[in-house]
Structures are given as structure tokens and as C-alpha cells.
Image 1 (cartoon, rainbow, N blue to C red):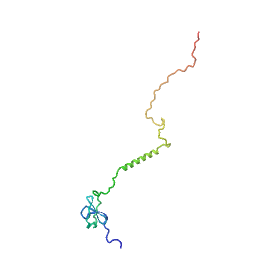
Image 2: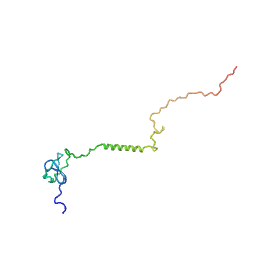
Image 3: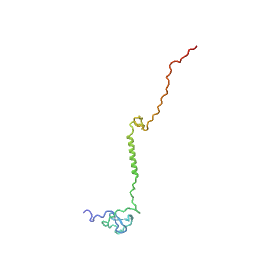
Image 4: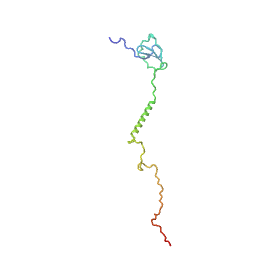
Length: 152
């Protein structure tokens, strides 16, 4: 015959304290432990040794108390916004580098402005014409020899 004649006991967990020493006590699956919960604070109070193996009453399960006080359990690390900020900065930097790589010139020369003609770019300021001045009128050069006078 396999199996035991007794039904399996209650699973490990927090139950109402059968000894009346606290709000709840931890049952490890085979006996009561010294861990008790009073008002959400976990303490250690030894159970009555004569009744330590009496199983909990079905339906007397409690929610797990938050361990505080003398027996603090390791708490989960608080989340921080720093990893999110760092991730966003890294993504933006990668996008900026990608944009620069895609838009660089094909000849790998440094980006320099190219010469443009007046028809390439619109005028940003109105053009002012300098005053027109007429060149000075000059006499054509004399190509005839000077007139000489006869000597008496």
C-alpha cells in the first residue's frame, strides 16, 4: 500500500496564531515556527512546545506580513529614473551619429561651404548700385609734331 493513511497537512504559510501570542504565526509544513506577526511586524516568539506540531485550522490562512522591526528581510531595490535617462541619452546620441554618417559627403573631405552664384541663392539684402560717374573726358593724344617757327 503506497501513501499514508493521513491526508497531507496544510501547506507552509502564515496562519492565525493558535497560541494567541500574535496575529499570525508561520507554519513550515510540519510545525509552527517562532516567527510571528503582530500588527504587520515580524517578531520571534517561541511556540508552546507541547502544541508545536498541531496543524493550523483550515481556512485560517493569512496574507504574508510585511517583515519590519527586528527581523527585516532584504527589500527589493528601489527603482531609479537614472537607467531610463541614460538609455534615452544613448539612443539620441546613436541617432545623431547615424544622421551625421548618412549625410556626410562622399569624398570624405571636411564639410566646407561651396561657392554659389547669385542665381543659386536669393538676395538677403537689397542690392545698392553705386553712383554712376562719368569718366573724365580726355583729349586724344596729339600725333603731329609741334609747329616750328622759322628763324629770321
